[in-house]
Image 1 (tube, rainbow, N blue to C red):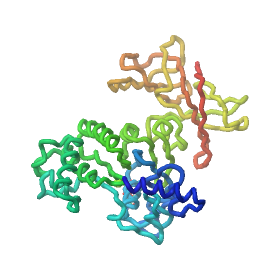
Image 2 (image 1 turned 120 degrees about the vertical axis):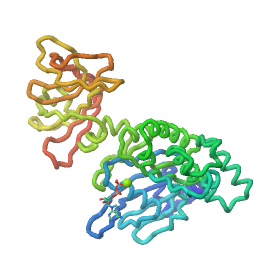
Image 3 (image 1 turned 90 degrees about the vertical axis):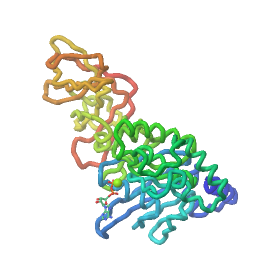
Image 4 (image 1 turned 90 degrees about the horizontal axis):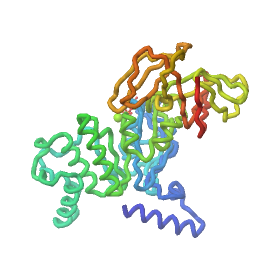
Length: 393
Ligand code: ADP
Ligand code: MG
C-alpha cells in the first residue's frame, strides 16, 4: 500500500505548488486507487466488448461489477490487470496512467492481485509453498512470517502441508486468496470467486472474504452476476448491461433508486405500473404518487414498485385478489391481481399466510418513487425521494 501513500503525498505537494501532473489529476480529490475514464475494449475491431466505462475505486473500498453473462465484467477486469488493451479511454492505478491507446504498463508492474473462478493453484506445491510462491525476493524468515499470518487470517492453519488435491473447493479458494494477498496488492481482483462452490459454502466464504478484506484494508473489485452477492459484499456496485455501465452507486441506491428499468429488474423483483400525470400527481391503479419531476399533465409514465413496498390487508369486498403465495422461509411473496388484470407482488412476514383468492386491499409504503417514461427507448429516467407513505384503495 506504500504506493498509495506515496501518490497522496506527491499529489498534495503538487497541488500546493499549483501544478498537478496529468496522471495525478486523474486521482485528484480523494485517494483513488483506480480510475477508469471512458474505457472501451474490443476483441473484434467493429464490435466493442465494453464501451465508455467510467468509475473510480477508493482506497479500502469493495466494488462489485454486476451484470448478466457476457456483459463485459471479465473484460473490464482483464483491462485493469493489463491482459487486455484498451481501444479508447484510460486506466490509472494509484494516480499513474497504466492503460490508454498508447500506454500498456505490463501486468507485473501493476501490483494487482487476482483470484479467478478456477483457482489455478500449483498442484505440485503444498499449501504453504503455494502461498509463498511470489515471495522469493524475501528472506526465509520474512516469507515464513507472511505465510503464518495468512494461514491464520484465511482459516487454513493445520492444512499448510497438504497438496491442493487434498483440499475442498472452499479451502482451495482460501489458498488462492492467501497467495494473492501475500504480495500485498494495491488492488485485488476477484472474478466470480464463489461460482464453483455449493451455496452454503459460498455464503460462508462471502462473509469470511468480506471480513478478511476489511481486516487487511484491501481494495477489491469482485465480479458477480448475483445481486445478493453484490449487495452483501459491496460498498458500491457497478451494474453493467451489454458492455455499458448502467449505474454506479451504493447497493441501497441501486435497489431503491435504479436509474434504468434494466437495473430495476436485474437487482430484484420489480413491478412496473402504468400511470398518468394529473393535477400534479402520478395517478395509478394502486394510488397516487408525487410528480416531483414536474411532468406535464397527461404524461404517461410507469412507476416501479418493489414487493417490500406493498402490503396486503384482507378486506371483504375489496377487488384485488391473491393469485399465488410463494413461501421463501423468511417471507411470503404474494402475487396479486388488480381489477385491471395488472399483477403486482407483495412481501409479507413468514407467518402472514392467506389463502389464494382472498380479497385484499393494498397498502403502498414506498419511501422512494421511481418513475420511468412509458415509451421504451427514451433516455429520460426520473427517480425521486418520497418520505411520506401513500395508502391506496
Ligand atoms: P462477462 O464476464 O460479463 O460474462 P466477458 O467480458 O467475458 O463477459 O465478455 C464480454 C463480451 O466479449 C461477450 O460478448 C463475449 O462473447 C466477448 N468476448 C470475451 N472474450 C472474448 C475473446 N477472447 N474473443 C472474442 N470475444 C470475446
Ligand atoms: Mg466473466
